[in-house]
Image (cartoon, rainbow, N blue to C red):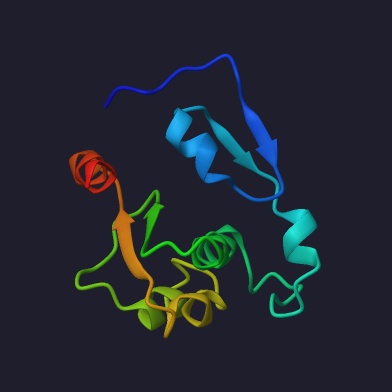
Length: 119
């Protein structure tokens, strides 16, 4: 899958849709927003997976695609993924009941990722 290249990189406390449309890389620095949000537990029960779900909800996304180093059993069971340590313990609470569809891309599923990103 081709990768967009740019000499500009946007760094900001929350992603801006204009950056995505321009095709420029975006780097989200979560500390400013997440440390100020009392709904996010300040513990190791929350890792990048939960923060990605939190940001997806905040941006009004319908789908969250996690690209992981391991395959997940299908159909996806968010509680089982957390119980098996494939996502952090808080992840189910960040995804459940928020209308967020979870997609899991593991090793060898690059074509699925390309399809999801093209949709």
